[in-house]
Image (tube, rainbow, N blue to C red):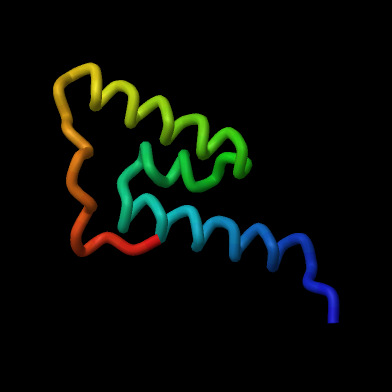
Amino acid sequence: MPRSEADRAFVRRVLNEFLERELGEEMARVCRLPHKERFEYIDDMIDYAESKGAKFDRPATGVTI
């Protein structure tokens, strides 16, 4: 059964509120980006961290994808 536009808007609003509450405004915005733009943004974040001296020579622990 197809959902009405009001139902879809409600689900989008609830999802957006959840993402902002759990991840913060910036990461919630990143989560809503299209897949390609999201990975470009993350690559830029990694490049910025490396330029500030962050080292990625050890694997991350406690992080799952």
